[in-house]
Image (cartoon, rainbow, N blue to C red; front, top):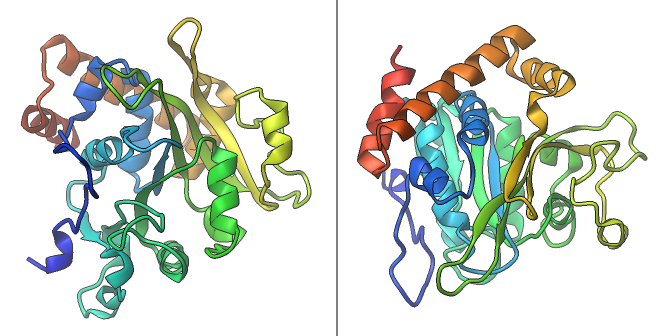
Length: 296
């Protein structure tokens, strides 16, 4: 096995050992529901690139991303980037296959040498143009913050590459201590915005904080499409992705008909519901059950 197929400093540095979770344990904790997880599964099974973001440390970004990696195509190769030591020489290998590879960075920040920052993030996003899928985490409260950080110095990722990111999941965490409440606060899909000056468009961030929007740089040429948001008051999730217009948009991205898209997401949700009903929660049991559906 190539050394880059093994995680490199994946969990960063913490006072206490990190405990990995499965997607079903994330659902059981109330951080997401099976509807949202089915949506993410349908997208990652089609090699959607993904960023999991939250502002505070210890919010569960890497834990969430690690669990979501079980939703990627089982035959895809994983390449773990090596932070400040990364050379990207793997793309020059004779057996390099962009259409069958996920490129993964544990975090995009300048906090540790094992994290990715500066020109290396630019190079990672350039790989999307070459057919690779990518996954990472970052410190950012909203999807607008994610976009602005990527498009600003010293990263300077072009808008056309940011628009190819596909999935941005922003987490809410009530506290980094004790029994904190963690939720998938918003789930967005990024897409190219034909109206370069229109900013975030009608969908917006779903947060409803206009002052925050005014303070946040919006990247022209990139539109965040809100797929799901958490209602803090009722502790429920609003599934905007079930709206016909968004189902059609997702189907277009997936290169299928809206009917085929809806049926596929429903099939995956039913499988997750059965797993939940049968008490399938451990990492190994979850992986095995996910593989059962993908094998059909």
